[in-house]
Amino acid sequence: MQKKILIIEDEERIQNIIKAFLVNAGYIVATANNGLDGISAFHKDSYDLVLLDIMMPKLNGYKVCEMIRNEGDTPVILLTALDDENSQMKGFDLLADDYITKPFSMPLVLKRIEAVLRRTGDNKERSTVLIYGEIQVDTLNYKVFVSGCEVILTAREFEILQLFMENKGRVFTREHLLNQIWNYDYFGDEKIVNTHIKNIRRKLGVDCIETIRGVGYRIDKKDSR
Image 1 (tube, rainbow, N blue to C red):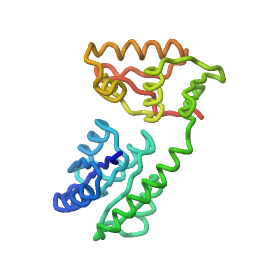
Image 2: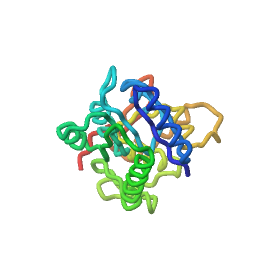
Image 3: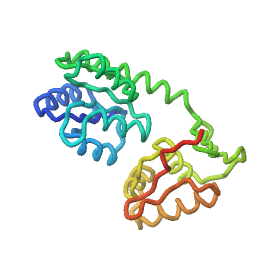
Image 4: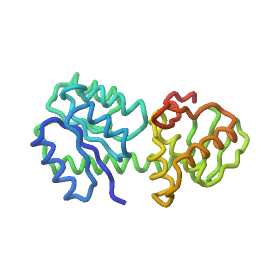
């Protein structure tokens, strides 16, 4: 499956160069021209990696990196002209996966992207149990436990809960859930999503799925492990 990368870079020339190389290498690429548009794009889709500039208008890369990291473990590579040690230390303190300084070699950038994706992909494969408070989701054996007791969910309910657990803090609209879980196979009322969410809440007996009025649903980013 093709990997999807989001480039957040305010210099159009650099953005175009990176995008061309990534597309040629077989990646699906989306772009944003500033930090605000970047975090908006991040919330609208799922990405395997984010390439992020630091010095940008509206919202700098450090803040964007912090927001992405607060919402999950999507790999982030900082790509910036700031080459001093303090800037790099700050990036790694925010849990960036790599830090590449400009000017850069695109073949080297591609290799660094491959290395980060390989490393984070291996970690995801090893991690088969998702934990949120009293809830444990065993993605390998398709089992759900609350306070050690197994809870039986339907296949759709399990997929919805797994998606939320893998993206703590991220808001999913009903349309996004239909597209992600039902894979465009369902053409009825979006209220089917509400019904599944209601059933998941009832079966879990734990107040964990939050309704964002007028937008959608999420599992809060705070994890009480």
